[in-house]
Image 1 (cartoon, chains in turn purple, blue):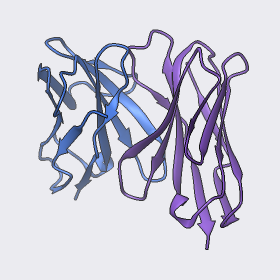
Image 2 (cartoon, rainbow over the protein chains, first blue to last red):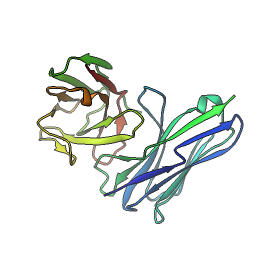
Image 3 (cartoon, rainbow over the protein chains, first blue to last red):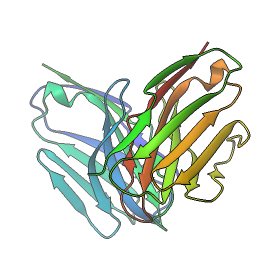
Image 4 (tube, chains in turn cyan, red):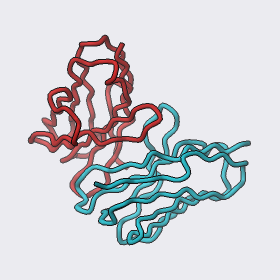
Length: 113
Length: 114
């Protein structure tokens, strides 16, 4: 059974810092990996999706990498801002590509002004 | 990206009643819809997979007689929580997709059972 782990569970840093969130998964037979943002009491905002054949994706200040063979992904946030404060979720889609996602428990991020 | 809506966004009900949550794909036809549940401070857990015109597939530990799923059309799936109890209070989120294409998530429905 696929398990997704996110480290750290919580992180608080001053504004302007660059930071890295980590995600690991136990079964490397994934179709893709996706990073989401969730604000308190809200739904999910998709940030980046990396297909299994890709190594990284970038969007603005965000960069996500994927090392499928080792079961790891990182989300890099550059020049953090208070508006980046949220919970960041990592999720993998099984190899067939048609099944639901397995989510990690998330990293609760606070950016101090 | 595609738009998925959920209704209602928030519902409060008495213990023992049934609650229906709708998930609609507004601008595309979704062959598959997924239902997830998120308890406070926990992550999303897949409850069931719903394919249009066929019975839903439930994850281990999810009672199919308690969480009734209907996917009667390519744009609508419903989740009915039957005889709801306080422990069913949770955030329910659906996602919709077509085969291996990206899944799009709805905004979620917060259920509180008193």
